[in-house]
Amino acid sequence: MIARVNKLALTGAVLLLIAMAFPFGNGGEDTVAVSVTGTGVALFALPVLMLAGFFYAWQGAKSSLDGFLLTGLTVIGAIIVAALAHRPGIAGVAGTGYWLAVLGLWALVWVGIDRVAAFRSLKRGEQQGVDLLVPVAFGLWLIFLWEVVVVGFGVNAVLLPAPSVIAVKFWLSTDILWADFQQTFMKAVIAGYVMGCGSGFVIAIMVDRVPFLQRGLLPLGNMVSALPIVGMAPILVGWYGFDWQSKAAVVVIMTFFPMLVNTVTGLSEAGKLERELLQSYGASYWQILLKLRLPAAAPFIFNALKINSTLALIGAIVGEFFGTPIVGMGFRISTEVGRMNVDMVWAEIVVAALAGSAFYGVMALIERGVTFWHPSFRQKR
Image (cartoon, rainbow, N blue to C red; front, side, top):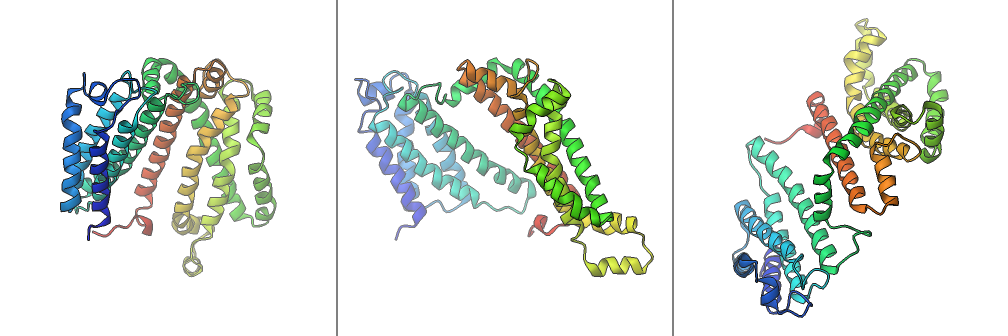
């Protein structure tokens, strides 16, 4: 019996075979004229992918190397199909053959990535590289689907621009995007993040040191965290002005409570026996805090830092919707939406996504270095 993964490869190969018998476009040109003319490698690449699919269907992708080879071939096919989408006769009027080819590529790339994800190596660098390659390949495949669907169906760019259009706009607007990034992230986000997380941490220590504050401050902190940010942002702009200081205040409000709650919870994680042992040795509250309780609370503190790394950027961008100098990511998004320049809006979204992901990644790397002893980071060698 053919295994499931082999059935997927067989399905992809059959779809590619059928696709070559149908027109790629509905613009009045036949399959060969639309898909091959001016794209010489297409005549060779699609049959090769089809044969590779049949090979893996019967032989099976038995190793990770097979998965790498099949994924590489599929990437070449995806590049060709994406390029064909922009040709006259296909763009906006893609035909049956075109969509069958996309489905065939989807089945083959599934087989390839599945085998790549199963790769295991005792060399840490190789394993980390593969672990990074799998989500990157999956993300690129989603971008490919976005591109071919938008271009193939001729979706209005105001509703959803193609990734290629966004990339061009990004490349042509790097100076504007950099200025907006500096205003929003380097000023408002960093300042608000440090103040919000720092104050939440300090107050958590106070709550732990003075027990009655836990009954008084935590409910108030919960109430503050429940305040609608779209209601607080204009008030803070009125208090602190239109520059980055008011956006930093928004970030402080958004990041304070997660740090407070996580730190208070983490400080209670240290075992009672360990605390009593240190007390029997004459350790003071601060010595127990530094030597035992803060290390035990570190995973909770870093959890708050990672959550706040994304909340801070969201808060700063939302704050800029309610008043800012003529620079900033939120200002640019709200302005360009009014002008129907949706490609610029998506370029700003890309910058925000990259900045937020990088910020989160930095916090995760610091966490791994500090809490390497935690069970979640232990790996079998």
